Length: 386
Ligand code: SF4
Image (tube, rainbow, N blue to C red; front, side, top):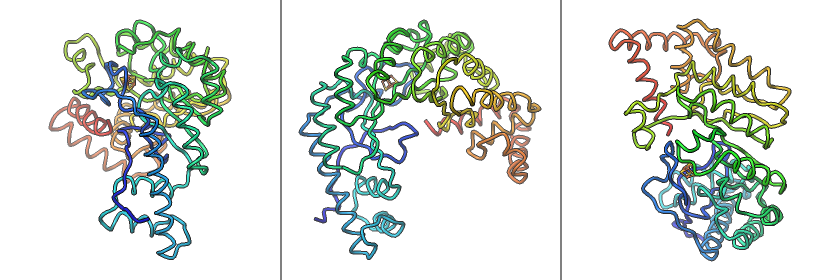
């Protein structure tokens, strides 16, 4: 077949670790949609999709994948999806977004698939099982199948239900834990308690499905940062998830939390305060074997990552090294990091040309607008990523 306009539905986001995954939309938007810090689904309405609808999308995705391979044969590349095939699809008009998306997935060859949107476990277990089985049958090349879910929803599922999802091919669940501190969970309207986070996490671990827990440094603001760091680590100590992923808070003016910033009831952590907060958090993680990652562009220190317990000191050293930098260097690092030029404090020495350019930029802004201007500049640059 050759219907280059063929398309299937995809949602707006996926976790950073799923950047090279096939994205398929199983439910639309978020059934909770109240978290004060979250801009993603505001103004949209949650809806379930029927099993037939989802299966239809999976069939289309299969047809597109087969068509792209056929195109590769026609172009003389024996079915391989290489640079030439990608450039053909992107350069010549008529190929739908779905074609582009599947072409890139085939090009990277990760075999990973992420089910969108925010909380697919709200589906009836038997429906989700049917979808998972169908997907595995149509795409035997999928090697990792993952989804987002809310702790509150997981708590309502029985262990048997989770096991049947595992058996049907669900490999990993990503949960937005954000914090383990109850007053903060309430403040940000997460709709879940620390005890429910623990119950959900332990249940997923007990089912054999891999668990990835997202933590949000900065979420406690200057008012609750220490309790946020300590209680979140304590909750994770009870769960021992496979992954702990850091995704730092940003507050663009379109999220409800912005109102609290404006009325002064919530005060943002500075980058230096955040470094201290993450240090306290990592120090409090005890007796677990999780892998910590900071793979989100919004994180100040990407190298705070490693396997517990053996890499704990290494992670703390990354933070200490940042804290020990002279004031001017810390500022230059922060500007470089927010602008995407730096991934490590080592880059300050590794690349003198970039260092000089950033220092010049900082001097220029400071001269015109003072240090506040530099902070404002960094906020604007960082908020581009939200
Ligand atoms: S549950 Fe997740 S997607 Fe839904 S509002 Fe909260 S953070 Fe956003």
